[in-house]
Amino acid sequence: MTPTAFETDCLVIGSGIAGLSTAIALAEAGHEVAVLSAAPTMIESNTVYAQGGIIVEALRSDPGALVHDILEAGSRVNYLPAVNQLAELGPQLVKEILVDKVRV
Image 1 (tube, helix red, strand yellow):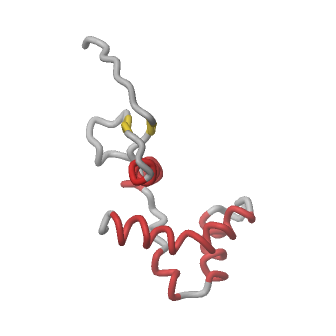
Image 2 (tube, rainbow, N blue to C red):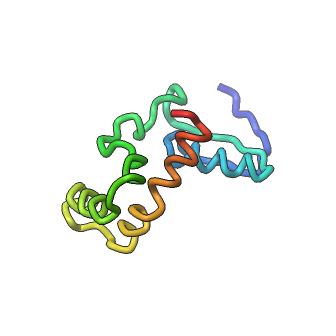
């Protein structure tokens, strides 16, 4: 295969939910974005194999219960400030990105 050079404003490495969410945000901000994936197809990523599920349902539930679930899933070795931030911001961000924009 002959190497090909190209220029882009932003290169996102990874085609999972984090990479594609970042690519969407950058594109919406007016940047030209390229996504690079090691997978043979763009639908092959670690996100596909994630067991945690999607936390958007937590919008209607107790954030404390979500913190507890995250701590249990992480064998209680989690970084608590990150867990609290995820429980506080995660459900709304999942709704905005996956439900409203991507329409999952």
